[in-house]
Image 1 (cartoon, helix red, strand yellow):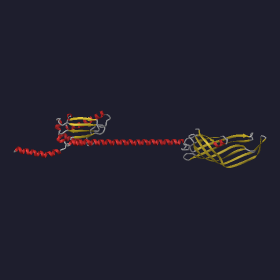
Image 2: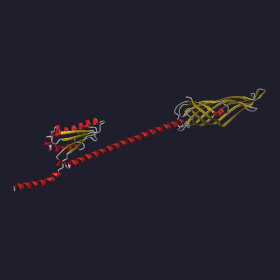
Image 3: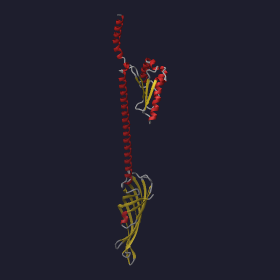
Image 4: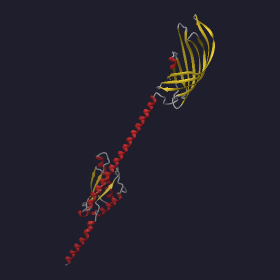
Length: 365
């Protein structure tokens, strides 16, 4: 009877404790994370302290079996941040040793308590796995696989995010480079346009000496030359001179003159193309285009205005017109048997246009 009662109580207690044992879920895999490129084990970082506390509790629970070699701790180190497989394995080994050293110091374990493997694989972490009896790990093994899968998915998501960030930074850098090249090309094209356009595009800032030739004078077979000195961008001093002497019909007809015309100019506007000036003119003439000739002196002056059209870096066209006063003091004469015979003196005053020109300007200095 006593044996029967003992057997019944044994069955009863077994049935009572079986569900409780089935519900006990001791974690058997613990993950410790490391910073990318680093081998130092930071216990307070990224949840490592919580994992270490849980692992210590488990080690304490099975310490006798661990020290006896019946339940070794499986340590796996992972690293993929180094350039070569050898360097990845070396860093994974250091990380594994850091975790083992922490357990040896804290829980008085030995190197023989561990089975260590290192991997040049994706990730920066170390796992510690404790193999416990099947009845206690039926649930925890599934949890460990789920945790490993979740960790792998997290690492994959972080890798994709990092790749997307790098691609976006590269795209922005390429766009910035193309924009800078485009701006530089537009600036160079604009500068080339300024240099080559036949119109005045920029202010003359250099001081130079120019040679001048009035093309209208040359068209009337009257050679005309002059000089202009730009003493600054806004002011210039010019002087033109003309001379000619033509005879025909056995010297019975004559066209001869000389004159000089100094001028002071003030250039205006942003491009310094328009100008106003003051001119003085003096010379002598001898015209005999009919039976009566005129020979005398010419003097006067007035204001001038004009525009300079830029042809290239060295050449300009100067369009100008002068208004003012001229005085001509001359004598009339006839030629009889090759002798000039005076027919009287006259003086004439003139108010109106006193000068016109289309002048080619060549910068020589």
